[in-house]
Length: 500
Image (cartoon, rainbow, N blue to C red; front, side):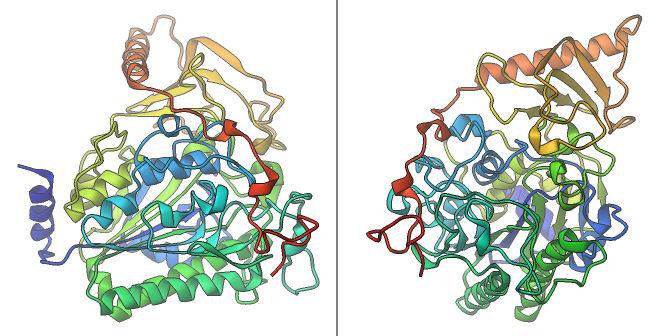
């Protein structure tokens, strides 16, 4: 039986047979940790809309991104392929980066376009801008785009103010480059971005896109990769000062408010009964910012590391009347979103090596995952070292460990950048079900059961790495100041003249 037929029968089982294709809303937070949401146990975060989605939907406890920093994890989400295949490494793109997500990579949006979907993105892209905007979302399958092309700290900090307006946001940004622009489709709409009003613009953009798609009787895919809760945190007047958690909590609340507006629009248009809503985060929290950097909860370390706190993320799936409320401990990843949505839409998968598995059984049956293993690549992967860690079932083996500046300031000496690269032979093995904090390595001596697990993990690692062909690094193509987005491209002197 082919996958389309199977997905259709599953939906029929839950009374959701329909001639219309399902809609998809994909929500992606920035630097949000495993312990940051109220529904994941944070005592002072105010996230009522996400908490409602979790209560009425399926909450994941073992969901992973593919990299502990932004650009690589976003590439993997949209393509269903590890970032090493598409060349989105090492690290992230900057305003003047020459490279970007290769145009021959196939995104979720492009897959769904073949089935007549309307596609839109609002928020942070961070997969390259390039010469004349050649890597923008509109070149990657999205009909419409409103947002910023990279992180909001990648520009002078004067374009970031908190509430009240005369108070500067906490932190330092990048001087010497253009101020962060707002891009609408292929054109710069505003520079510098007015961040205090941008979230409302996103909300209006998203709700209008849903309303128009429903009016046109067209299935839709809305992708919302938020700036929140990336440092430096900020919030507009609607959220500033409303949370119990200070500026970080306010930024998180502003994200939650927008999600609430999208959910209300789905309900008002009647689309909610035929829409899969999926929420996740790109990587773990930036612990170097202390209380302004987020929380990985009981997980070890955070952003920049291949410990659990760097790559295990909160995730929620919601489909009104279709997905039964509950919690799943099955292994899943951002890689699995493309094949899942493609199958539900009746689309053909791209003819390339995919690393994702469809999650239909998890979502609709609370069943078993097709994913047996998760691979952990560092920020700067290379062929010499290969995978830093592998999770197989509930067991995880670290072949290499390394701290990161992003996870500085914590008492754990394994987390900061001063924890240099260390090879482990034999590897460190943890049972993540019994020890999710990775505190107690399992002994190999006199433990044939652990030795057997290690051999299984080594075999899985070898088989996977035999399939890995590293794509040409797009990040190492370098940077050119002339490629920095400027609304007045012929003006002088740059970058200060780029203002409109």
